Image 1 (cartoon, rainbow, N blue to C red):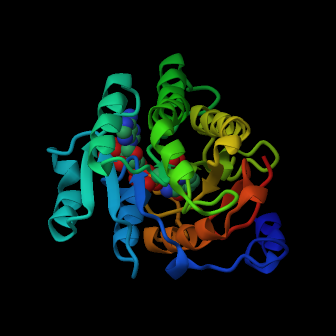
Image 2: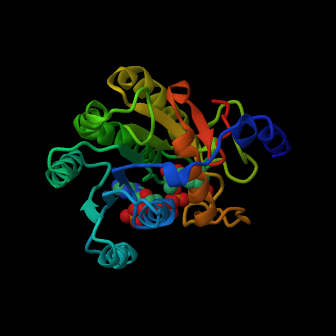
Length: 279
Ligand code: NDP
């Protein structure tokens, strides 16, 4: 922890990242797992911007279920919010979601894809199971891979249609919500929770982000892995420790960092304050 806070001053804001949320012009954004936690917070804060996107696609597994109630209330107040069914472990559901979004965009592209949905299982080295290893990998790694593949044509369209040079989150970007728990150099909070499948999945997601940056940079698409901090959500509070950040604080930080990212950040791993994290 001390190491984390010591290095904070030398990068991130200290390195000159200036939040420019007001000047952050995203025409369309899609967030997976947007019915609760950080995903819901992202949808809310995008909608609350002084220059909100024309379209916020908030995806969740079951738009008709009780878990989507808050999202539905939000949609009733914001005509630019569209709720889309998307189960990230189901390729057919992903394809159907991409088709619905494409229909709504009426020929324009998708600027920002935020792969936020994920699961965590509180297993240890002793208790970890093949079933949880597979399910967590399918959700946290294969999910973002397949979702990115399905939305790639729309991201490319956004990049091609943009007059902006270089790479940016307002042009075309894939943001993979990662975790410092997946850092090999600094595997955060080992004493508090081993969460083997989760750590392995986020290390793999970081590698996927790097691969996407190599594969899609030439298409004008920025790829970035973002650690949202330790946040008071169902997942963040699942090990019942005191959790420092509210959803609001984390999301405000993320939305200040995204507009500062450019081609030099392509394939990087950064946190909610803009600090570059070790893999
Ligand atoms: P929550 O557990 O609060 O919310 C997870 C979201 O993902 C829910 O909307 C959930 O939907 C959705 N989801 C889970 N599985 C699937 C699936 N198979 N298909 C579609 N949606 C799914 O998590 P957080 O908001 O805390 O986490 C958001 C992201 O931030 C995750 O990637 C997480 O790993 C990362 N993160 C969070 C930290 C924290 O402290 N909270 C720390 C570091 C990283 P449903 O309601 O249907 O289950």
